[in-house]
Length: 588
Ligand code: ARG
Image: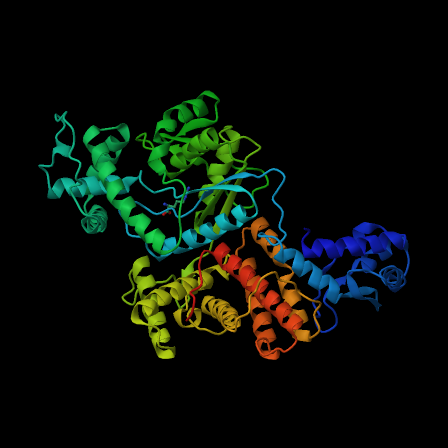
């Protein structure tokens, strides 16, 4: 099934052709004057240049051709040369029935599905997730779901930060605290213990402590650098410690991501790229792309068209240590080798844009990634507090993600308790479900590249463009279905009749552009397009609900049609929130 705008455009193009005009002028858009019409085409205005005729004359000729259209109830030329359209009620009902008959609502799978590697999450091992990691996880998860729904093969990779100085810092601090651990004995050749020498809370305390010390104490910093270097060179005891750090930390991370309804297919990290670094570096040197500059190894990546200076991409530091660039480049090697992707996309803070420009250019220049594989940087903006500055705790520190979630859970629980008498258990789980929707929708309803303000009061509101409002609408529909069935009626086979009232028509109009929304969200990596669609759909449904006696409708056929419309809307909304990565409760 074609997307709505395409169907309409095809029809208008045919009108242009029949009127002796070039079809390419028949491009249609949603009306920017909904009071005048539903869709519009400004092509006759543009055609004036080519045909040297008054736009209105051409618009009238096209309108004449569309008089008996199956699509339009109104095709009207208005001065100075616009074309205004309204859709036929039969056409709207047919389109909706077509959507209802398909589990993808008419969206067809691509002829050749793409293999996409999506790099999102990006947490750092041994550091608790903080609010800065929220956006990558939430946006990445949604982009993954949207691409999968489109029919592509998506491999989500968490790309753990597990290869830098932070590992050396943890090892150094552990050495200070427990120097007798066997991991530090260079002469030890036996097997290392299976049990890690720390818990997750110890680990999370060790890192900031070490990081603090290394900032004040030069000798300590040197030790940490040395430990990092030895780890990277493969020192056995340190490798064993790394494995413990990874195990403990990853178990904890998985738990936290699960709470966010975020998951990954691969739990690879920067360290997985390490084996590819030596050959990669040798190749860059052999081909003459990498050269020494002040002791470091770099690749030039500036281009003539650059508006701002793009410094060379540093591949190795003067002490030979790998950097963030190095692991990202070497990671591309195994991604290409193991998955031969059509596209690798990174969902990362937009402040890292320069890093990705440098890496992408180096990858192209040195032939690390074939030309057939796209490289996309999906940079997101900062989550700010109400003061417009990056979100902080009340004390001004970095807020843990788990604290943020707990705060929203609590707020939602209070609200639910105020409103109804759900049993305690259900109230708790329902609160968690709605809280997650509040957080995710609050984030995703913004264009990813923009900064936004995390406003807990606004996000948890049951009114307005919020997650809870969407859930509330869904729950309302579920409850109507329950009542309908309680009256002994069955949904059975559904059929939507042509709309008779304004609110019925508006609901069908809001439903129809589902595919348009999914396509555009996918093409532009913008889940906010889905939010906008489901928000407008929810509004249209609630308007229909207030204007229509659904359960009290006496005409059986009409009622059946209403229920069909409701049930399709419900399915579409549930799919919409699933694409955003959250769910609705049964009641709230
Ligand atoms: N760990 C990094 C950070 O916290 C993000 C990683 C993003 N992904 C990547 N391939 N570089 O900033």
